Structure formats: C-alpha cells, structure tokens
Image (cartoon, rainbow, N blue to C red; front, side, top):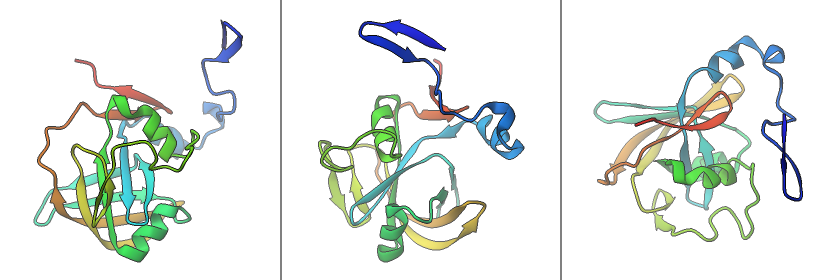
Length: 173
C-alpha cells in the first residue's frame, strides 16, 4: 500500500516485511503480545532497544531480557557485568529505532542526547534501573540475560511506548 506525497510515494507498510502467512506460529504468537520498549545500555558505551523483557519483583528485584548474543551490548555487559534498563516513552520512537539499528546514528548512538555517565552505563534523565549481571544463557535464537536490580531512580514514569504486531503503540487514555 502506498500514498502519494509531494516529491514521490511513500509506503504505509513495510514492503520488505515477511507476510503473516509465512511467519512461524511462534513469531505470530509473539507478535500478538504487547511488549514494553526499553533501552538497555552498558559501560563502553553500548546500547540496544529491547522489547523482550520483564521485571520480577522480589528481594532483590530482577530484570530478564532476550538480547542478541552478537550485539555490542552483550560484549559490554559481559566485560563489565553491569547494565541499565530504561523504559521508553512515545516521544522516544526515533531513539528506539536508532538503538535497534533501524535508523542512522550520525556521530554514534550516544551523540546529541543528554546522557549522564553512571557506573552501570550511560542514561538519560528519567526512570532507569542499574543492574548487575547474574546469568546469561542461550534461549531460542537469543541470549537470556538475568540481572539483579541494584538501583532505581525515583522518577515518575512517563506513559510507556509499546511494541505490538511490528509497530510502536501507545496506551489510550
């Protein structure tokens, strides 16, 4: 599907996306589950957009996430055993795409934003958790990372950015 715009045509859908009928049943199931869009960073610096993650309450609280074993983020986490997790808001769509490798990052991933360096990795103002790596193991086509939450910033959270059926979504009202 395309739309006429000044200067040419623009696709309203991803022309390179795998059609639903060709996706595995597992991928179709995962696509029907809304997931939080988060930014994980580590000393180095390195960063990656992660939506396959959850937070487990307890003493101590834990964060679990699926990341690419060949990512720069994993290299940095493996070396430092530290990382941050920050939920993204609807205003962070371009940042999410940049750290997912879907958008150019002139000057590098961390150029042009208000980054603060912490022992856990670079963070932006707002809600974030500093984590220490507990375990990493293969899980499906990813690496399951488990971290203990050592610190959380006491900031009121913004509305979350969600990923659902291959697109970013916002909570209504």
